[in-house]
Length: 286
Ligand SMILES: NC(=O)c1ccc[n+]([C@@H]2O[C@H](COP(=O)([O-])OP(=O)(O)OC[C@H]3O[C@@H](n4cnc5c(N)ncnc54)[C@H](OP(=O)(O)O)[C@@H]3O)[C@@H](O)[C@H]2O)c1
Image 1 (cartoon, rainbow, N blue to C red):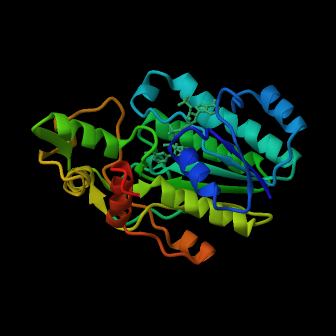
Image 2 (image 1 turned 90 degrees about the horizontal axis):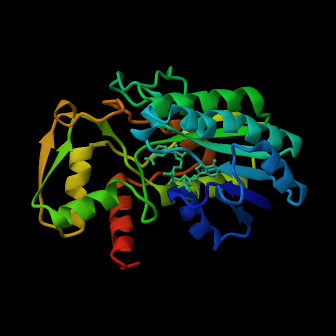
């Protein structure tokens, strides 16, 4: 089986790349320099010499605050590019696996969000990702949208690496405790994506939610990161209002994962167990 991965130098793409070494699937990894998903001509040209059964779109504009001032760029990558990917997937009879986000929700619920809950994004990033979902759902014949949350990895930049760096340099960190969700180790999500590739479903058009198990706040997440990394740093819980960011974020964005668990017949790792694995990896223990 031939599988194309776009945006593969990011967190998720890098995890798929690492796991792919153990798999009997022929992966082709690309990023913006080789394959810019906003450029249909480039995509078409690339496909002249390649044939794929599955296209995994890991490419995205993920700078949530910056998106508020770079709306057009975020739209090109997170929204309009989905038309290009859907078009080429349809033309080549490929399944498109697209990654989306918990930030499509406004966080006003207090029970985990299901795939049929109504999105209402608060930020430009969330809006562009939702628009991308809608375009993909309208255009693609074969499609899986995987919404995930609070992604981190030993690759790229993320909350785990930022907390480790800052906690080593400072005696005290202030972290918000009124935003609740679930961290997701990108390696776990990569494993799920590989399982979908192996299942290779046909004639499908579905949204699935995937994160690690459990619920936490950014404050508790930061405390756990420091404890697991053996860093002494005082973490002070603060309210979002005490640390205003440019983009609005949902106060509650826990995802209900029942649908994907049934679809793939899987159990999902608890967020603290996966965090432990990632910290060990960052420390060179595995
Ligand atoms: N990070 C999170 O907390 C989070 C949470 C929920 C959902 N998600 C979603 O999960 C997916 C993967 O996220 P991630 O954290 O792995 O993202 P990431 O680390 O930011 O990686 C995205 C990759 O896409 C590349 N890219 C940007 N524009 C492109 C273009 N026009 N054509 C091809 N590649 C392009 C980026 O290259 P450059 O670096 O050179 O721009 C980067 O290598 C995304 O869809 C994201 O929206 C992320």
